[in-house]
Length: 78
Image 1 (tube, rainbow, N blue to C red):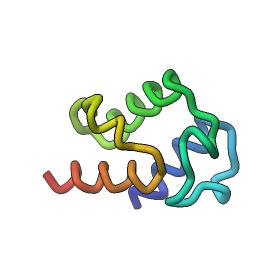
Image 2 (image 1 turned 90 degrees about the vertical axis):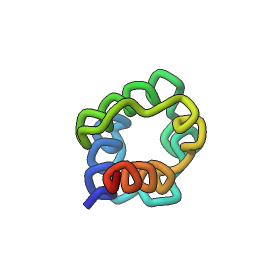
Image 3 (image 1 turned 90 degrees about the horizontal axis):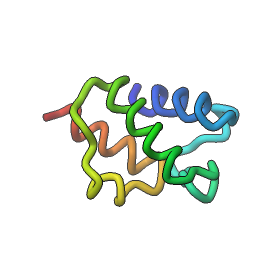
């Protein structure tokens, strides 16, 4: 469920096919994300999953879709 929502958001933001996104997809290398893209994605994630602000330390650890899904899963359990 979380992965599917994330894929939909990423496909929309980066203009890529949903089928091309996997847990191993890297934001910078595979999607061409820059720092502004990451900030926009973060705001979308915070709104979509209705949890507080994602801290900079957490953002720095996110390099793949799988990392993001794990973060959302952990936050959802809190």
